Image 1 (cartoon, rainbow, N blue to C red):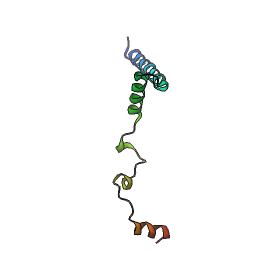
Image 2: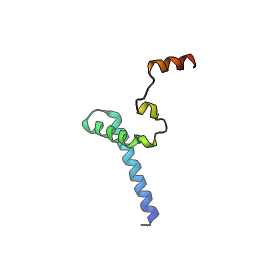
Image 3: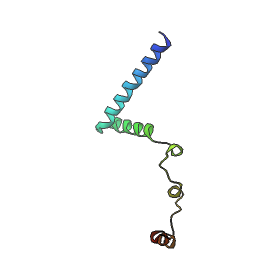
Image 4: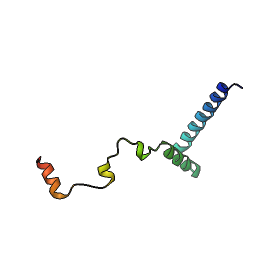
Length: 76
């Protein structure tokens, strides 16, 4: 077997396994189905340091105090 053929077979097995996991996760009938859902959720979760939508102001829980919020709403 050539390295290209091995790589192709590996990718094919990976795709089949991914489809099987997704099919099982969509059922939610058994413990295995729930386990497959957790595996998919973990694999697709974005790491916090790579999430461009995160806001340090919210993460650090440094919100506005009431006076500051009132000044902001008035446009000062």
